[in-house]
Image (cartoon, one colour):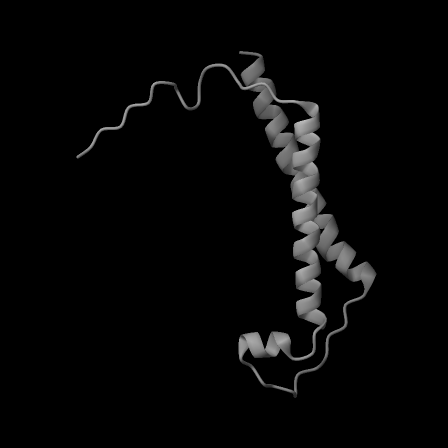
Amino acid sequence: MADFTLSKPIFGGKQPKTSTAGNIAYALFVLFCFWAGSQLLNMLVHAPGVYEHLMQVQDTGRPQVEIGFGVSTVFGLIPFLTGCMILGVVALVLRWRRHHR
């Protein structure tokens, strides 16, 4: 079996320098990806028959479900932001613990 050795440690050593502009650009890129994904999902949900065609279900006897803006915010945006906040707190705690060793 082949043995791979790395000249530099993967998880140790000096951290690479990051720029604020690079971090902002990356955050904007991620936000754009989330926006584009939400637009695609929105088109999929609101296009007549596309979801049924993709799922190959032709059941027209099902009731139409209309979700309002408030309901989608409560059950969509708030859990997403809460999860991001929890991940951010965990990342800050881990960074603080590594910094204060």
